[in-house]
Length: 371
Image 1: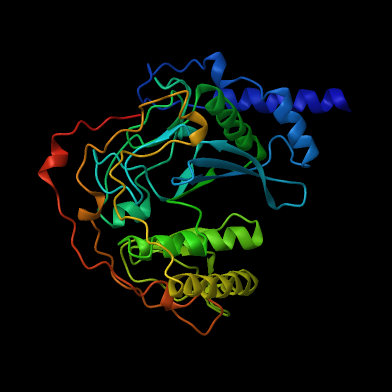
Image 2 (image 1 turned 120 degrees about the vertical axis):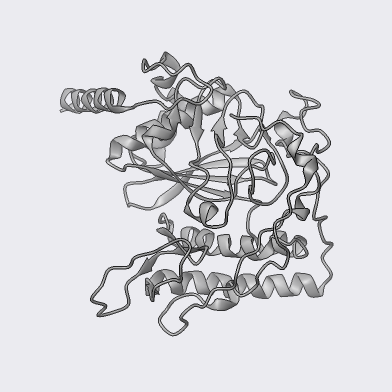
């Protein structure tokens, strides 16, 4: 029995290695996988998987939090739910809080991204790297551009989430093994911070608040169900866990730039998310009423680093070399949402940005590093 299982695992691994075509991203572009890309998980992590009842090849979800400078790997356990496996301190991220808008703005992306085997780069100049797939459908619909935005090693970032080489080795192996579950991809959720009432209240004056509240819906779906949210885009907005209305004769078709079709959200998912949001909104209102101090819109720093690395890498977080990010705001329209069918309400989406995108010439002179 054990021999059969080992034989099957070896066959699956061989099939994966044979079928994986690495992308060219600062690598040398050869198709031969280096040892670092096929390395086994360390014994301590394998033991942790066993303790948490997580099959080695089960799917994963990666969650990124800029302000806390943390990367979480969640993994599906034997019940089919995602549980937290491990939290990694982020060694370096660049830019400021807020989404990436343009090539060269040094912003690390925020949003929901899908990683396929083709986006795994074993030949990266930054030890190993995982391309986030930026720009996604949402980014493209909002005229955002950029390339080679990654999670990688080397603790150096220009629009990426940089880890140490030891960390990215584990994360890369977890991602690689997850494809052997039969899933063609895994989801990355990138946030400005943990979307708690306190953090949102601190950043209540930030012009990205409406965008972050939109991300919070997907976050709440995940946190209340421990299931990966299904992500679609329409009318230049994210839509989560949409399904056709009852008795609908047609499948849902989403166009990222066009009006959303009529849809409903799974009632149980909507109920849980709505209840969490109700509690969060009450806490948010209390904090605002108590005059919780407001965080500055622009930090003045180029990104951040988890405090665990400050002594090891002094001076890597410097004064920003780009103009204040708040001067580059996207213009997003409000979106009409159906409200009588279990879906979440338009009040979460009804705020539009008031300023158009402004290209500042100061940015053009800054080199757009690629990772």
